[in-house]
Amino acid sequence: MTRDEFMKDPVLAWLKADKNADAEWVVAAWRASTQMNEAVLGHLVRSISRVGNLSQAKATCEGMAKFLSADEIGKLKEQIAQDLVEDAEEWRRDFDALFAKK
Image (cartoon, rainbow, N blue to C red; front, side, top):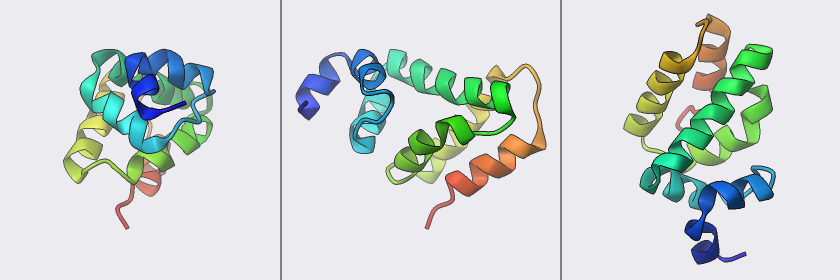
């Protein structure tokens, strides 16, 4: 699949790739598409809701961390906190570790 093909319907392409799509493409789509932003956010929130941390979304987080700015990371963390039913310190530590800027 090419980047252009991915960007035509990034949510569907991302889901078909079992969330293992090129991280740069995912970030580009996340920036450009409300639907992709919501899909990624939902994936992260579901991971936290199920297991209390981001272990189920680790590959997505690690890939995105390479391309997101510090401001975008902060906004993503804020979005996650707003969408969670229960907020816990464990996921915040996990998030900070996965999105730490090298």
